[in-house]
Length: 303
Image (cartoon, rainbow, N blue to C red):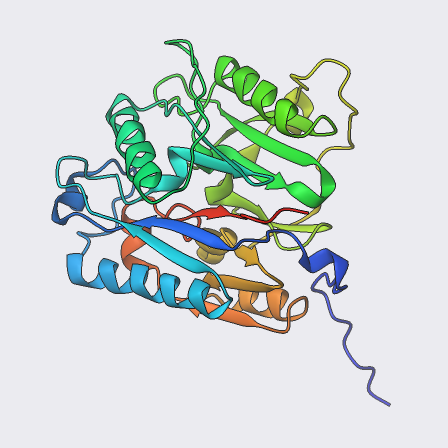
């Protein structure tokens, strides 16, 4: 008798585990034709404008199919990275507030995004940042139902996107919104932002790009008296090197959106979610972009 091979992929499929992100609105920003002049560490070919616009459209369609209202802010040709609004704004428990990107080029985007959203009736909480305090949304992994936020700190002096000073201010804002929140800050390198190389699939499982190095042993908790957690807070599945880019999954409203063309990631998420939507990302990858970079997910009706 031939023994049936064991399923080697982790599976934690429960109704509770799927409630990672709940959103009623997503803020996106149209891609400027100047986008190829944006910041990137990738050297995998010149991106195509029409193709990257189609990738953004596919993501918008996927989010809309999950009952999320899509807001698309106008393109800004003077700011080639502006179609990645996630680094400029953060939403937590129904409160949208501004961030302060480490890249001087990206900081110029914040005021315009706040102004555009105000005109649309979406208030953005003002936050004061010291001139040396930086935080980008791509480094923030928030699990609201668990009152948990994990923040990545740039571990490279030549490319600081989020630093300790920025995390301190962010933690105070989060604590004012949610007194029960635990904020854990961890140094990382190997990828541009923490969520470029590490994202949770469920409350128990996360996927990681092998290039992403997270110093869990150097973690600290910026909120005094905050309850501490065991780190890492998830069981981590390290993806094969040729699929590492696909670690940036987007679990929202009980379904999950993933990059198209990555069989290992596809197999893992399908064992955890009834609805899996694949979106092409080849041009986004050339610009250090991910599904998460393109979005600011916001819940207007938090529980």
